[in-house]
Amino acid sequence: MLEVSGVTKSFGGLVAVDDVSFSIGDAEIVGLIGPNGAGKTTLFNTITGVDPPSDGSVTFDGASIAGRKPNKICRRGVVRTFQIVRTFDESTVLENVRTGAVFGSSRDRSTDEATEHAREAIEFVGLGAEAETPASELTMAQRKHVELARALACDPELLLLDEIGSGLTPTEIEELTDTIERIRDERGISVFWIEHVVDAIMGTTDRLLVLNEGSLIAEGEPAAIREDERVLEAYLGGAV
Ligand SMILES: Nc1ncnc2c1ncn2[C@@H]1O[C@H](COP(=O)(O)OP(=O)(O)OP(=O)(O)O)[C@@H](O)[C@H]1O
Image (tube, rainbow, N blue to C red):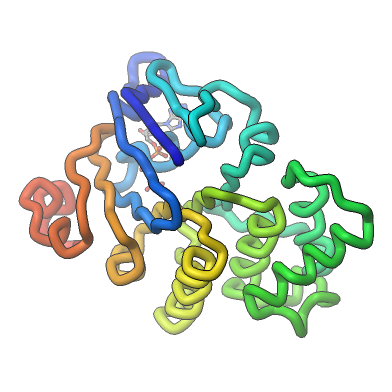
């Protein structure tokens, strides 16, 4: 589905992502971990069109997407959430999620159909009772579910999550990971997930990629990554 090949991103003399290659298949959850400044968000940006790669290729379902505009990439089915929650606070949950159905999806929907599609995404993430609540009145965990619903309303084939678990309690993270597993299992959507709370994704991801100083230093099943010496060294033996 997603093929990243030899992707490099430099900012002046700084190589933030250095010759990274990997692929993501259908209906799998792939985690991306690494220390602060490793290049994780920059790699996301090269895939989602926020910052085109300096070198290398990104293809999605066989077509090149490197250097395309973020809205075009989103409508092709590569949809992301952001590290900082970006809900429109004065708008209701339904209004927030409708923006995904209207602007993020390639499908033509009437106003009523877009509203129905948004409601369905809100139900899916368990916020049905809050559809008419302003986003400003929600807890942080609920707002993260609004972000997920808005992304789902864009009709993704691949969902990129940038530290969606940050700032949540262990119980809230568990609820969030349950929803993310259902996105894969019930919708067949693939997930590419950056997370600092490594424990949160260890049990949920099918595969982990580890970035350090811009380079991919390990890739494999979570249990193997836990034992990988280069990974332990990059995290100073502590966090994994
Ligand atoms: N627009 C930019 N201009 C210049 N340097 C940048 C830019 N974006 C990122 N960088 C640099 O690239 C490197 C990688 O940053 P990035 O944010 O991708 O890391 P990260 O792994 O996502 O970190 P964190 O876990 O702290 O979010 C850092 O040294 C950062 O300062």
